[in-house]
Image (cartoon, rainbow, N blue to C red):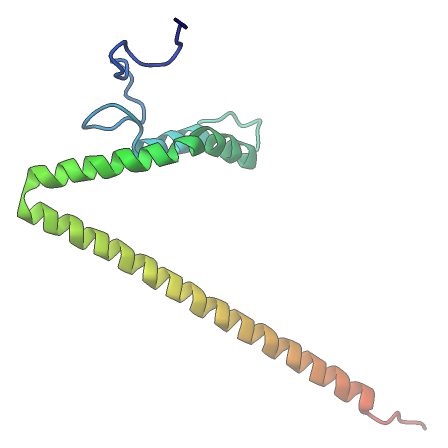
Length: 144
């Protein structure tokens, strides 16, 4: 048999004592909150000799592959928390989910409105510039 160098105990569990970025319910993987905290602490606790861009790139490269697992673990934790709380907690989770989707919809709509406004202003400025330039070239030259 091959020897395995994974970070699990013989029965497949995560080793005890490792809590950084782990789920508060099961402690078997990263959650979105833990992953975000780890990424932010990596970026802001870096030495001042490196650039912010490099630190963000490094932190995202380290945490990026774990995002899918963190999403699954967070969803599982929310489901467990919802089931433990009864009807009111389930309504809170559903309304919090609908509120989140509504917020995303509003943000997307405002972004589209801002983009339309920006394009309208840009095309208006270009049109005014073109008209002024054309009018200047069409003026008869004054010869004294």
